Length: 139
Image (tube, rainbow, N blue to C red; front, side, top):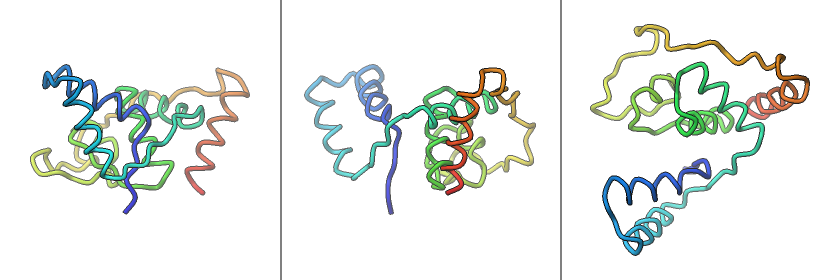
């Protein structure tokens, strides 16, 4: 099984360890080393992945960071493991359900969808990048 994460993953881990758990720099580096031993492939945030992220952020009301995980899962046709309930709901059947998050199905909840981004408004360049991102997602 291949484990993937957007490149911001490592910054998020360091941030949580320092700000929420008060770890020292040495403890953070050790925790990062242990996390690295899991063999997580870090995927760069290129423009096409960023555009899919922005679209998902707008439709589901997610943070850009959360939406980047869903964008990566969609473009790689992968499952999404998260403790974030809103992100899990946005991922729908792609989400790996974790006990304690609730088992509501997306279809049973009020629609979390916002208005999709009007890519044409931003010109042919952005529309082409978005099309390329979705083409890669379907490949």
